[in-house]
Each structure stands twice: as C-alpha cells, then as structure tokens.
Length: 262
Image (cartoon, rainbow, N blue to C red; front, side, top):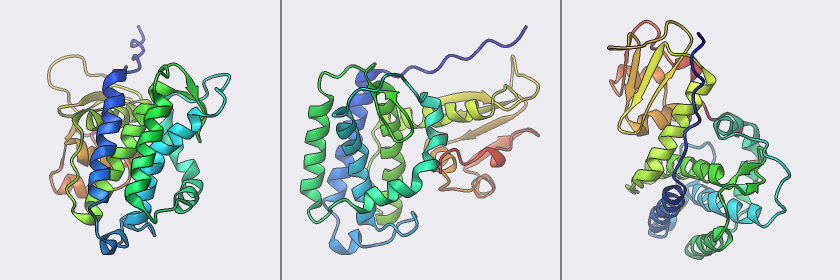
C-alpha cells in the first residue's frame, strides 16, 4: 500500500496576521533607533547596506498593500510550498525595487507602511487571491510568506547591527514550519526525520521508511540555525561540525538539498 499523502499544514489566520504586525513592529523600533553610521554599514547581503535592508523590510508589507489594490486574479497559480523555491527567480527585480525606495525618512516610511498595510488588509478574506511576483496566491498563504521574509531579514539586521531585535514566537514558528515543509516537498520520503524543536518535525528523503521507535536517520537543530541553512546564510558542514546541527545515520546529510531559498 502506498504511503498516505501528507496534508498541507494549516496556519491560524488570526495568529499569522498578528505575527506579521508584531515582527514588523519589532523591526521598526530597532531601525528608527539606528545611527546614520549604522544605517550606512554593510550587511551579509552582498552590496546592501543596513539602510537597503531596512527599505526591503518595509517592502515586505508595502507589496501586500499594493497588490491588494490590484484586480483579483482569476485563479490560484502558486501553492504555499512552492513559494520558497520560487524566490530565487526574482532576485534581480527585488534588488532593483528595494533600491528605488526613498529612505530619507525611515521613521515616516515605517509608520506609513504599517498604516497602509493594516488599512488594505482590514476585512479581507484569507481566501481572496492576491497577485505576487511568483504567481497568484491566497491572502492567507501569502501572509505566511511574510513571516518568512520578516524573520529571515530580522536575523540579517541583527547580524549587521547587533541590535538584538526580538523574534515574535508565532512569526518564528510559521517561518520554521514553512521552510521545513518545503524541504519535505523538495525531497519527499520517510528515510530522514528532521526535528526543529519546538516548532516542527518532518520526514523527508527517499529510502526505508521509519514507522516506530527511534528513527535511524535524524537531523536536529534550533529554529534560527535551520532558517539560516534553508536560506543560504549558513553552511551545512560548518553548522554540523560546530554542533549546531545534530545528524545521525548514513542518510542524515542534507547539504545537497540546501539552501531552499536563494
């Protein structure tokens, strides 16, 4: 008998919406406190300065508000689990759009972005379709992708500035789970169990399927290490050798499957 098809994870709409706003508020508070020298400093994102990174963080919400003002697409074109792998295809246009944002008054930019986002989203159903760079998605699923963008770039901001921006628990959970599920979709199977406590456990990779007892192939790490691996901010071998990733079993090697996002 073939294995049962895995159900797509469902996300609580109210929690996701609150998480997006909470994480954006954390970032906003940190960015407006940065000095001009810090804003002009480098990041790990190629040529982007901290100011460029801050601009992109506003674009995460601004794009949602803008797209909700466009006509609703006729059909859904992109599934949630396909979004992480699709992101690399638009890196150049994302960079161009980010650099076009006026960052002369960052406090005003963040305030206006938050207000426009909340106004645009008020009363909008999760099932409404919204156009994105990668194809039409439901609003509910697109908001889950916003948690990924916000959490990943919060980590970039912390790495660049040492600001210690906190992570909203629900935003971190949604980000972790989506990237874990994307791995399982990229490499379907049951030979390896990937554990990212306290948020996610997935099985992936073709091979003998684990049914009971201790799995023979296990990968375990913390949420931020997993997110850095999944987005190319960290290298598998380095994280494993420095014990931030535990990997046991002959199949518990994910280096050829990572990163998931460009």
